[in-house]
Amino acid sequence: MRTPVVFTALLVFAFGTAHAQEKRVVTTATAMKPSELALGAEHRGDYNDAMRTLSAGDPDKAVAMLGRIAAACEAYARPGLRLVAAFDAAEYDRYVAQLGDGTPIEWLDMVCPSTFKTVAFLAWERKESPDVALQRLQQATALAPFWPDPHVERGFVLTQIGRAEEGLAAYREAIRLSELPGADTSSLAIAWRGVGYSNIELKRWNDARAAYAKALEIEPDNHIALNELAYIDQQDPQPAAAKAPAEH
Image (cartoon, rainbow, N blue to C red; front, side, top):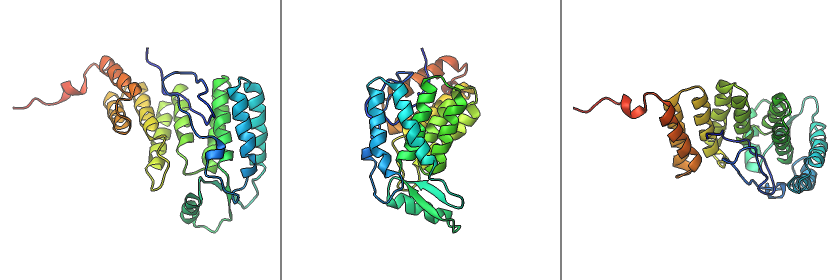
């Protein structure tokens, strides 16, 4: 039976997700290229403690711990100050150069957008209103403008709640960010599979085929993409091969 590309989160261990197809173990906060220059870096240890608590099977306590980090991150906001989270100084400098409007900018540690993304993941897992997950993902993208991952997760949520066109746009934004010079490409194949999934929901079979082909260029033999291509061939009443003009 076909199941969707799933919501992923920054976890210490392989924490179980709602669907089996798309498990991903991502780095802990301590592996995020730490910098004493970044505001909020002191919360890295708290974040990792929350992830260990989650992996130990106490999501309620983990949610409370993450909530305290999220509140601390929100408290950094000041009128006339822009906060931007970046993985390293080079990424931060690229953002500053792109902004170029004289707005004062403070470098924020990635633990803040990572917290918002993980809180969104848990809101979805706990079957809270999708608006809660979307709001937290919006906070993550606002703070980390070059980070593709929250856009991937936003694409998942939107497609799951029947807003596939918006989900498709979110996945494509993740792809755009992943293809910038020096960008993190760890979510690129997942984003392409998301584009494929959203197009299936919209019954755009050939666009879905093309997206899964892109994903397979990055991760050859990925079973999710191959299974989805087989599903498309079952559902499409006029497969791409049948549409090609005959050679003479």
